Length: 291
Image (cartoon, rainbow, N blue to C red; front, side, top):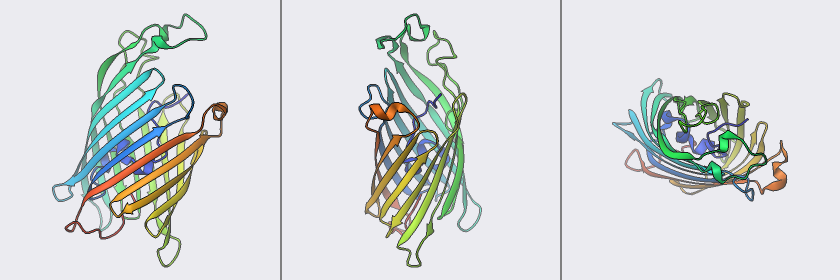
């Protein structure tokens, strides 16, 4: 009843992890690191780290990127390494269409025999998942302007089996489909206050369709404060601050409202750090980049 890929409250700041077409869209060499501790205090709860690096090349016609993710859930560990490639098509003065490919794979390991079961005899937990590398690839489409964007992607097309000795029905990667969108607009004539609503929709077989809806207020193009709603699951708050025009830090907290897990954990925390190393126009920042 759940997607296999990790969730992110900072999805709008971690776009390359879900859509390879985002590579190079910030017109900078951008490094983003994110750590998520989900359901703090709950034994075996998910802990996820992602590291993405991407940059435009060839006069901003192409984008290249690298995505590394480590995801721990109970006795299982998933580590993935992917290269991202994006080809950009300028459709108008401000609009760009980017087509992306993602290629790499996942290193999977599961110590299932270490679990204590309520009932014995379940073959799904009779043996460990041996460490093995599962190659995969995916694609994405991303259209963006300085004030709005929309995209769709399938990061992993192949439905690999985690362990050849186990039933594919209990140990197979499921294909995920993602849709992202967002915009930003002024709330005052002085441009001191803006609103940035974003959305992230996740679809996968045998799990409910889930949507993250977020609204961020931007103060003086420096401070961001907002709230998040995840359908059927959680509510959250986000804080962000630009220490410099190139260096941003962010924090979020969310808690489940739709089930009883809230009684047994302290919610979920995320920390995000992003740095833009290089900008166009000889390193001068012409305008803030909201996405």
